[in-house]
Length: 504
Image (cartoon, rainbow, N blue to C red; front, side):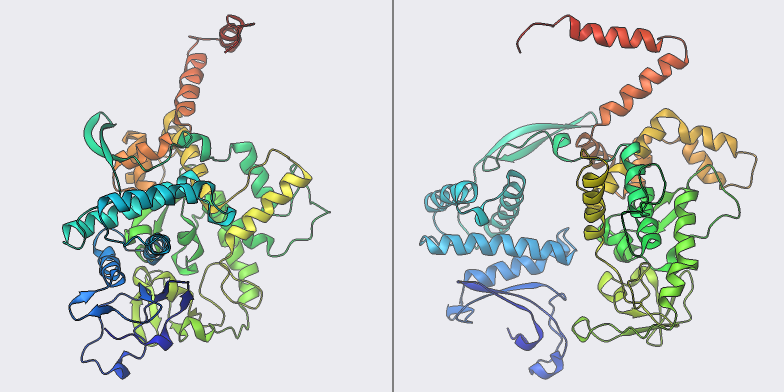
């Protein structure tokens, strides 16, 4: 196998090199055909640049590379996933090599190596320690690799021991294998959080440069406030993943209805930027969509006007867009649909009037993608200046917040009531019927892009789903006169009074 070493990025380690494949310039490699290796596929190479020690005896790195190249057809289509898998296996191989254990050694030696590796990752040097969740992810990756290696005849043993457990999802039970090497972790809903409505308002005000009361925060001089608020509201209002809202194009933003509407507005998510490249439709509120359109028409238009931005050479050649519309445009003279354009390609798109084609622009007209930094800095400012309890904000927390808020609306009948208000108008009849009849979990499954309602149910268990149903039950009881609010308070207080003075 030949690689254009000048076309890949090297990350040197004491034992092996981790590089990322690029086929650019393959015609000069003396090959008859373009290599069947996906772009950006990780490639492991031993530091002596050899792939075998004798004819027909490939090194373990070659076997790992074969496994990595099969990932796109094995349910892992994202380059970031390939890299994470490659790094996990490489670190394991390097650790084993330091202790004289081969990647495909005997089960006894592999188990001893795993025990030492677990100790190293738990109590070793600070920079080498793993949290329980990170350790679990690495063990899952290694388990997948060894299972594949044994099926393909490359390995005779693996270091893991499993027990059989019975899992119950949505009333259906099935047998599952549990890896005993995984550490115990806190209950998932303790570690994955979302924003309550009051904190959501606080966060959106922070993005706009406002104080909690909505007045101008005179102690803060922020930049691109309209952009930040529009995209933050978009993420909260649609449940899009970070990659999805970061690489949206202005042409893909739905049209704003001529007047405010009570029901949510469908928001198509193009397959080119979704996880697993599966098209779906989520929704967005009128106010959140209006803020995005306001940014597009004013602040973004000013930023893009007269921009001479071009993508840096390391990203690849510029992709010049002409004649764009809602479905696609001509890219370097070739008509393309937007849903076929990947995030890496979208970053290189140059608009007809200049500047990047991405939704969010930085000063000068280039693409803006550093949303994790914007959200975290906003949270830090809120925590220091206004609310010490305010949590750290990462993009996925906004997705969790959308999920909980949407489920709350679905369970309490908020959307059904909104649908009734517009049944005699020109609103989308199919959407009105969907809101009125569909099961809440099925609706949320479609909005989040999960492949199964079982995934949605398991996802929600990582949040505080019981609160949603408890609040809906209590509110319904109060509304129907079955339970007064004062009586509910007395009943709840009695629960604590009964145990007063006891030590748990």
